[in-house]
Amino acid sequence: MAKQIARKILESLCGLVIGAGVAAGCAQESAIPVTPPPLSPACEAPAGDIAAPAQLPHVTAALRRGRLRVLAIGSSSTAGVGASSEAKTYPAQLEAILEGALSNVDVVIVNRGVSGEVASVTAERIKSEIAVEKPDLLLWQLGTNDALVRIAPEEFEATVRSTSAG
Figure (cartoon, one colour):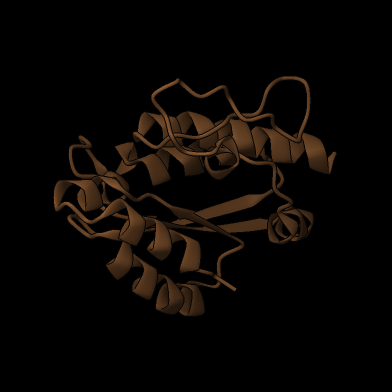
């Protein structure tokens, strides 16, 4: 049962995250763990850095309690710039999808998107947001603004790799 619920969450997340312009590997109908998608010859990122199976113990515990709290953090795609209404932001759409798929679970998604923010600024903000919001799951949308302001790829990678919620 927990694996079926986790698969539904992953499928919902993947559809919305890909729609927001972030590369992700989605759950196949087969089962979890997920095999990363094949990379194009032009992609230099290791497949394991793009999509790798992961245990989600906090999510599993939250589902058992009947309440899943998600913190969506990032820049304009998270904040909802370009969305026709608050209900059309990816965090709001994900909340509606998960509420429908998980009828016995109260799903709360807190949107903490800030337009124009680069990864290093969000990385600092993550610490305080987690302390305040106490989420079971963190979704971090990042990268576009770093590329636009020409953050060196090595600096961007170091920020992402060094950022830990725990």
